[in-house]
Image 1 (tube, one colour):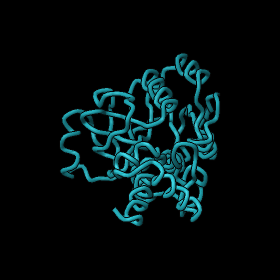
Image 2: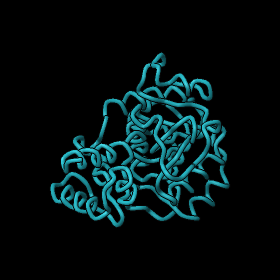
Image 3: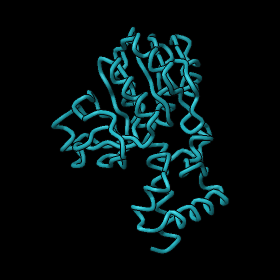
Length: 247
């Protein structure tokens, strides 16, 4: 595979999953980790990604409010507007982080009255613009890699609440493995979010469907709704329809 093809693959994986590991890329690309590191360094020097220990991050992590750094922004807006239909007056909602959740926060009607818990300071700031929402930012260690709070403190806080609906983005979703991720700390937070929620909605662009990461968060049977940018009749959703409700 040519260098240009490798680097295009790396950028696409970053766009989809926001984070890549050098070890995983080495296996997928069938090249040495040294080759991967050189590619990552070159892409970082060109301003296309953020190099971190063991891999790289999408620039959307660092610049989530800047239009040019958000992948599939229109699709995420579409997903956000669909997901808003799940939120009813008086609900208690738990929201995750990420660019899709930011679009959801922006899409919430100004007259909607409900309570939001969130693990994302960025999402909390967007929600706080809506004067009829009560917004509770959960405490913990702020992860610079994901812009969400992690650690034992936030997990303990979640054990003391029960919410009507959890709205969560995902790195990967498949019928076989369910919700998966590549970050151990994020997996633990998402597991805690599942446990304290009566219903769970996964918000995902279509390109992530059918993909898997190395760590499992939960099987598909634990998910109540799947909200995507696809039309409900799309053939790519057929296998999912046997297990969960599709929006």
